[in-house]
Length: 254
Image (tube, rainbow, N blue to C red; front, side, top):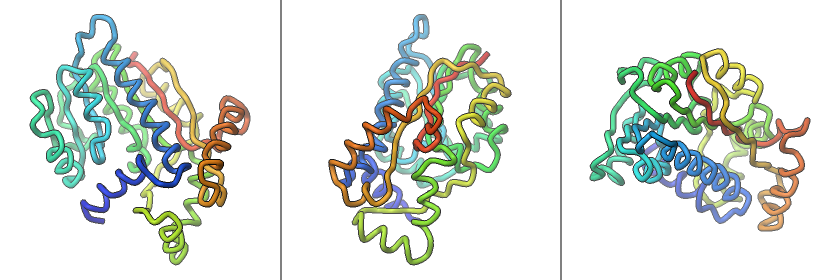
């Protein structure tokens, strides 16, 4: 997978011509941006110090730069850091660092805000990541975390969609970059909540969002996206909430 694949994928998911795909990603984007702004505007914080782990193409970097005095962006993938550097390297309050969060060399108790969006599902073990983030945060600092739900309709369908031969059909349907997710550590909402509690975090607020309805999403156009959003409102908070795709949470370090 080359750098152009990553950039193309990021452009596709947030500006997709497919209404359902666009809604699934833009919904999370809006939620995270609001959480970043809220974290940066906390009373007495004076637009503090933020860290983003795993920036991808840097979709959240502008929000972090606008709401925090200092921003550090880290990744183990050089291509992601190269992309961020090309887009935002001239920003005076941005530091771009190669760093593995599980074995981080960053200073303890240094950050007011840590953003870890769509990253933890790519790392084999949950607890080492959360423990490391807890170490990096100041007391009372906030973690903004998003990750897919293990049994969401989209994740279950992806197991079929990425099979050899099937993926070629999916790409012809969407006519946009489609890359295997690489999700190796999917968790339920209960598992995420328990892991956060066990590693010393207290929930501020959270949300579960994003309904994917197979076939209808691919061929139903705007109608499919509108229907998915209506159904999502009925499912959220209920016994079938697990079919929704993305869980988002803001937690504070105890």
